Length: 288
Image (cartoon, rainbow, N blue to C red; front, top):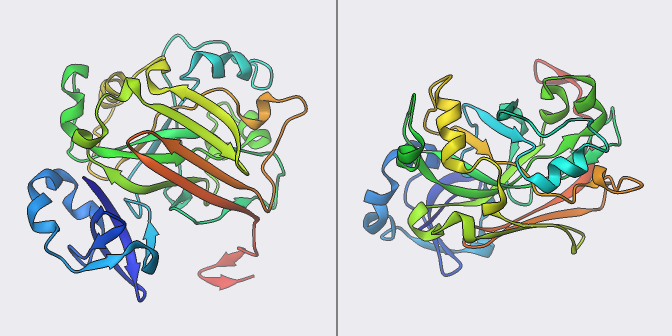
């Protein structure tokens, strides 16, 4: 089943998405139900149905507790990254975090930062955690997964390169859009067989099978939970295929007016416009 957060007349609801309609299951964020979505299937469809084009979709978790992302997780992307990041194929999983304020949803703008023009795109499968887990073995990792979504790990390459942890270049506001829906594992099926694609203004830039990952989803969850507890509402970006803007000569950065689209079989389509960062300077909610 596909589950979404959506707004009607400015009020937030969550519910299932079916046949281009959303159902008003509960007036709150989907994050309250991540642990038992499968048991809510029948009751959820009893809510009022609203045509999809009459609501504003939001990301499946409005403010994730953690946004974790793995780098260099497709061999072809490792190869192209050597030209701009000077990083060899990692011997262990390489992780960084994106800030909670980076989270955004379908149709929300991705900002070209005021401090850089080197804005890049990365199409990724997103995993949404539904149950807490610590030291979760790979063979049981799917037990803590609520579902999957599409995501873009937007990256500011000069800021990323300037810090070994990559946190600054990966954590800008608006740079972790994901959605449009949380799709439960039973509907997604065999991840390895599914294709992921990334488009800029309709031009195909990235294409791969999810099975091309160096470290699959189960291995990622096992590795992360060996260090800290994964909690409901945590979001995992699982790596990007080759074809990012920095891999071209000359680089092909995102600019205002562009649109980036992520397509993943059985998961969905996420599309976001790119705009120049507006005046976001403030202190205590007061503009500077």
